[in-house]
Image (cartoon, rainbow, N blue to C red; front, top):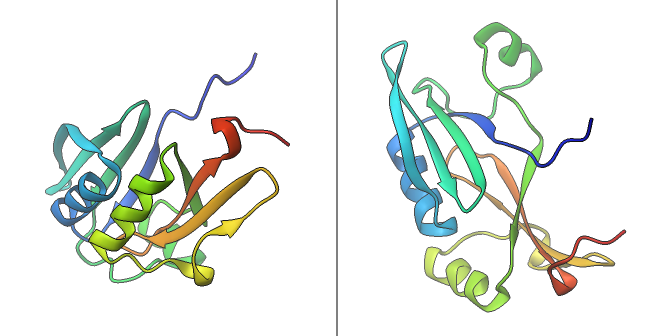
Length: 137
């Protein structure tokens, strides 16, 4: 058996509406499903084939450490990557949204270029542009 692709990521966020709006403006994600869980909003955000599930936890004021994750049931990742295909459009989005790009800007890898930004809750995102839009190693 082989995995075809990553289906989605679950994220605990401070504010669902703020998060959904930010991912819409920055990456073109749209809310395709929503509901409530434990009295808090959640939703599925989709852009192309990429999906994120966001669950609001208003008490979340920073990325929790490992002990907090276990105690509170938060989802936890170090960073995740989103692939783009248009450098000019991405750089225009960075300027328009005044995104802070870590490590001084675009980071050149042997077969790609990456930008590292944070979402409103503080999740780190690697924005990857592969040479010729083809992952190579």
